[in-house]
Length: 175
Image 1 (cartoon, one colour):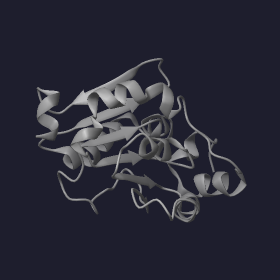
Image 2 (cartoon, helix red, strand yellow):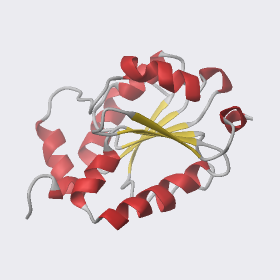
Image 3 (spheres, one colour):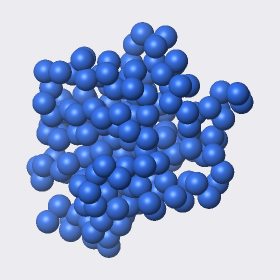
Image 4 (cartoon, helix red, strand yellow):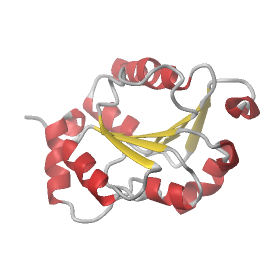
């Protein structure tokens, strides 16, 4: 067994963490501080289908639904947190929770989502795996979900936000 950061890629680490955490936790930023950027690049009025990877027990997706988003799919490697979130939000049909390792999202078809939001999963992968695995994460898991059109929003430990546009014109994402 390695250090805790090396274990970030392991389901048992997150199952243990969420078994002992009582309340919601947001990595880096909460939804209200990111909402202006998300609303700009992922407009609600076009009814986008959004994937939130590494959702944990964050209230982020619930706040997105409260802000008008209607189809937010959440995945996490921890079955403990997924079951807890399914129970907590069972009366919110706009929120779906699926147990899944972000490094293998073959359950989803290409083009399944208009946007993918990552608020720390990439950082977890960076500290727990070899650097070349990061490219595998982005190019084999995330990109096919939004091909041909889509946006990926990354928030990482650096004090910046990154939108990876997979097309040349954001307005084309939702056409």
